[in-house]
Structures are given as structure tokens and as C-alpha cells.
Amino acid sequence: MNSSGAAVELTKDRNGTDQVLLRNPRGASARVSLHGGQVLSWRTDRGEELLFTSSKAVFKPPYAVRGGIPICFPQFGQRGSLEQHGFARNRTWIIDENPPPLHPNDSDGKAYIDLLLKPSEDDLKIWPHSFEFRLRVYLTADGNLSLISRIRNINCKPFSFSIAYHTYFSISDISEVRVEGLETLDYLDNLCQRERFTEQGDALTFESEIDRVYLGSRDVIAIFDHERKRTFFIRKEGLPDVGVWNPWEKKSKAMVDFGDEEYKQMLCVNGAAVEKPITLKPGEEWTGRLELSVVPSS
Image (tube, rainbow, N blue to C red):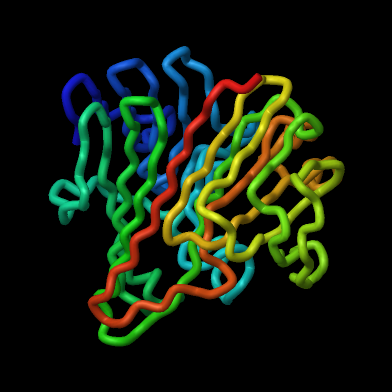
């Protein structure tokens, strides 16, 4: 689960939920909960937290934690008959002691953990498809955070799914942030019954609530935080779409697990496959990758 100089530690939170703490040789860290297979923390080697978690987040199953990186599977949003964002984020994952090898498996300086989710009998009643969802979370020697998902159909018939890494980034102030890499793209606006529009701006800035899915994006998206003088880079494979969400003031006040003013300190930018669900034939496997990095900017 780790290589030279990297550390992997099994812990529990205050409610007894199993967690995994990853630390690279330079001291950067990530914390992953087995509830939802959810990354809850990603810190630099200076201890600076890069992910947002609400001060009102509920850490008790079966609720999903408001923050970090919830995994939306096998449904994104309310685009289907399942609960919002599917059930993977509300299930208990297990540590995968003997995962199939990843290629290339260059683990120098990386701390990593492999998790596994299989459907329960109750899951099969609401979504009758047998699958294995393998997730590797790792920290690189440079402190980048990577998530690799491998989803295999172990059913006797095909199935389709959507997926998103619903990443809550910690920012200085939503009015001081811009996102690049989405210009000229079509997007579905969830505030307008998923009507399709085309992005007109050179960069995305924020003055009100936003809930969009940008379609067919490039593989690198950047979030510039002018006040903190840092830039997040989102690199993705197998995830053609990008969700962008901020609830703004009115909706923040309506959410019980979210502070009234916290919308100013967060922005969700999600690597996703939403518009065209992924279909797997029996025995087929899909792989998606997300890598997050942060660099100082002038």
C-alpha cells in the first residue's frame, strides 16, 4: 500500500468509521473514509487544507459528508430513479487487499490505498446490476492527489452508469476565483431544466448560484485563486464532462449541513461522465482517472 518513505495509517473517526491516512515523504497528506470511499482531506506539506468541508457536515452514516470528494455513482444528480448522486457515497467500502495490477504501476514515493465496493442485496433491488468498483487513492511524491476508478461488469447483461468526482475545493472567496478550460464549450444548465447553452466567456467567474455540466471538455481545467495566489489543476482521463456548482446565498441557507456563508469558501468542479452514460458489456471494465495538483501563482 505504500513505497519508500511514504506512510499508510488505519484510523477511526469519532463515530468509529474506519479511515485511512496517507502521507508522502515530504509530509503532504490525504485522509480517506471507508464510508463512501470519500477523500475528506488533502493537505500540502505545510499542512494547508486544500479541500472544503462544511462546519455543519454530518459524519455519521448513512449520510454523505458535505465536502471532500464524494463519488457520485451510478447516477449523477437526479438523472435517474436512484437517490441524488447514486448510492456509492453512502455505502461502506472495504480495503482491497489484492487488487488487480494497475499499469503502469509506478509507485515511487507514493502512499496509496485500494478500496472496493460491491453491491449489497438491497442495492441490487434498486439497481439490479452486479459490479466491482475498485478505487485507488494515492499521493504522489510531489503531493498531487490521484483517484483511479475501475468499474467492472460482473453481470450477465450490459449496464450503463454515470459517475462524477464531486470535488469541493477550498478557496479564499468565490468572487476572487476564475476557472479556465471551459471556454466555448456547450453546457447543460441545471437551473434551467438542463437547457443547453454555449459558454461565451474567456474564463468562468462567479456572481450568483451556478449548477452546470460542461460537455466534452479538455483534459486539464484550472482554478485560479487570486487572493491565495495559488492555482488548482484538474487533470482527468475517461471523464469527458465537468460539473461546476456553487449554491450561493439562498440555497446555502436551505441546506441543514451547510453554513449560511460557506458558499464563499468553496467551489465544486467535478471530473464526470454525465451526458453520455458509460455502457459496459458483461466482463468489461472502465477506467477513469483524476489527478489534482496545486501550484503557487503570482
